[in-house]
Image (cartoon, rainbow over all chains, first blue to last red; front, side, top):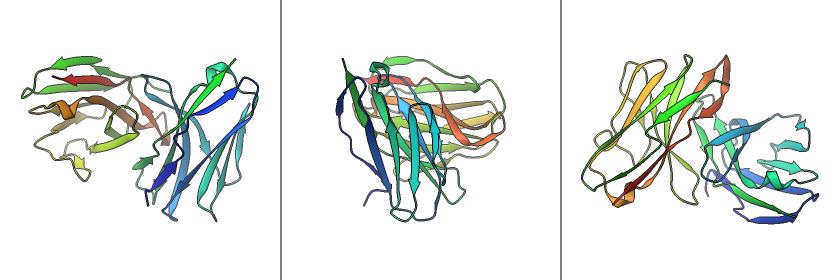
Length: 110
Length: 116
């Protein structure tokens, strides 16, 4: 089983839709979780950290489920500009060495 | 967030040659990393660049193929040695510990390498 798994998609949704991605991780000792966004031919950029209590930033909501070992990202009211690849990142044991998921591709169409 | 720059941004090289990629951060950072990202794939960690000592390589990557330097807290280089077409990829530098934020990684813009 891969350490961090994501459905590669693509998720093809109309503008205004709500879309959710999940990411599962195998190491139960994992401590830090993030969602990064990567646009085509660009470097990854931090979208948001994922806290145990969940966190929300505008249209984006991230949640952590330790019992089932997954994190989720919910995007409400999708915009065309949300089209990108969303990378799940997990850090374990205080090593600060992150493990990246393969990414989930989102395409928002008019 | 701090600015991370890489150069060259892209290069096309002949097999058997070597290319050195430079990564510069505009503030001191605790950790620097080198990643490779092949088309349609996620990021693969090559090594952690340690300041003043040998880099720590991940499984499948060796110093002879990917020598790394980190002479100070803001600069690192990655050399891709004796290149083959399989080395064609995007190479990304990243930094951890920017502006007191110890658990967030920031990435450079990447170096797009094509080996003929």
